[in-house]
Length: 279
Length: 318
Image (tube, rainbow over all chains, first blue to last red; front, side, top):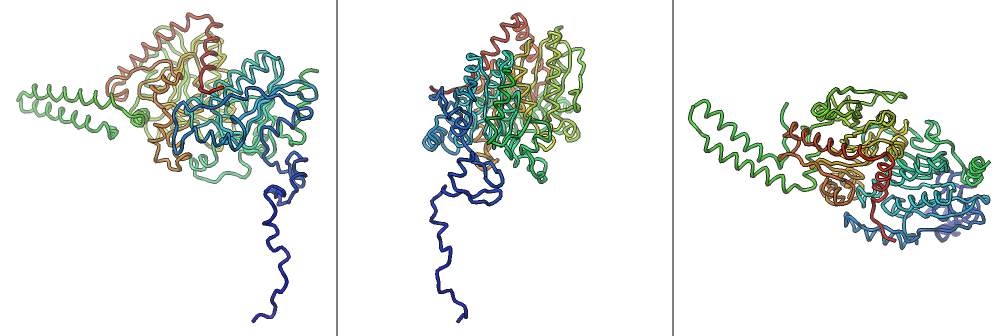
C-alpha cells in the first residue's frame, strides 16, 4: 500500500469541464483564458497578446458603423444550384445547412452605414457560410454593393474572409471574379475610393480579384492571405513552407498590402482615409 | 517521338496500323488489296466518328491535356505572319509560360498573348508546364496596354493547368497580378478575343481570359479548379477527378450552355492533335470573322457590350 494516498478531493476535480462553452475563451496564441464579455468588449482581440479571434459579418458592420447601426440591402439574394451538384452531397443541402446554422442567406452581407458621419457602402464576407466561398450570389451582392456606391457617389469598403471561389458552382464561381473586378473599374473611373480589408483567411479567387484591388489594402494582423493553398504549394514544391508564409506580416514585407491594422483601430484608420478623401 | 495514345483512342490507332501494314505488304508483294483497304478505311472512319461523337467530359479533359495537342506557338506558326515575340514585364523578368507578340492575321495587325506549354521535359522546365508566375500576367498586361495605345485588337490563347502555386509566386503577388488583369481587361479600350485551346484552369486561365468573345475549341475544359483539385478537396481523393469533371460541368459545350462561352470551334474528326493544319485553318477563319465584327463597333459600344456580358454571368435567386 502506498504511503501517500490522496484522501481529499482533487482541487480541480472536473470543474473546468463544467464551464459552458464560450463563457471563457482560451487564446490559441498565448494561452490566456479570457472572459467572453471581456473579449467582446475588446473586439475579440486577446487582451494579453492581441491575437485576433475570428469575427463575422455582423460584427464587422457593427464595429464600423456609428452606434452600431447599419442598413442591410439585397438580403434576399441567395444561391441556386445551376449544376445540380451532388458530390459528395447535394449543394442545395449544403446551402440549407449553412443558412440554418448562420441565419444568413449568403456568405456576404452588404449594408449602408456611416463612419463618423461619412456614409459608405460596406460588404462584409462571412467565413461561417460555406467557408465564405464566392458563388454567383456572393458575386452579385458584391457587384451590387459597388453599384450602390456608384449611385450614391460614396466610398466602398469590402471586408474579405473567404477560402476562395465556390467549387459547387464551377465556372460560374470563377466568373464572379471577373464580374466583381469589372465593377471596381467603374468605381475607379468615377474617382470613388475603394478600401479592401483582408481578414483571416482571404485566399484563392477572392484574393485574386477584389480583395487585392483596394486603393488601400488593409490587413488584420496574422491573417492568412494568398493565392494558392498551403497544402497545394507544399505538394508542388516538395518542401516545408517558411514560418509566417502568407500571413499579413509577410505580405506587408513583400509590398502587397498598405498596412496592417489592429481591429480595435480599424474604424479610426478607415476614417482617416475617408477624411483624407474628402479633405 | 513516340505517339501518346489515350485508352479510348487505342482501337483507332490499332486499325490505322493494320491498314498501314496491309498497304506496305501490298507494295512489297504487288498484290492489290485496294478493296480490303477501302473497307477498313470506311470502318476506321466510322470508328473515329463513333468514338468522338460520344466523348464523356473526362475524355474531353484528357484530350485537352493530350501531350500531342497543338499549343499556342503551333497556332501562331500557322495563322500569324510576320510574328515577333516580345519579352518581359519590365519589372522582374520574362515568364516563358506566357508568351506575347505582334503579327498579322489575314493582314490585320494583332497582339497575341498565350500560355505556352512544353512538349518534353526540357521544354517544360523552360515553360514551367504552362503555369505562369506573376511576371507572366504582368507581361501580358503590358502588352495589352500597348495594343490599346496602338488601337490593335488582342487575342489571348488559354491553355494552362493553373497559375503556379509556389513560394516565389506568392511573394511577388500572384493574386494581385491576376486581379489587376481582370480589372484592366474589363475596360481595355480595344477588342479582346479569348480562345481556349486546351486547359482553362481557374484564375490562371482567367488572368488572361476577359474580353469580348470567349471561343473554345471543341475538346477543351474550363473551370474554377482542376477536376483533380476538386476531387481532392470535396472527395478527399484526387483519383476521383472523373466524377468531379462531370459534377462541375467543364467542357466547351457546358460553357456554351452556362452562358460563359460564345462559340465553339469544332475540331476535325479525331481531335486537334491528329490534325494541326486543319484545326489551325478553322481557328484562323473564326478569329478573322470575329475580329471583323468586333472592329466594326465603336469603342464605347464594345465596352458596353463587354461589361454587360460579364455582368450577366451567374445564377441566383432573390
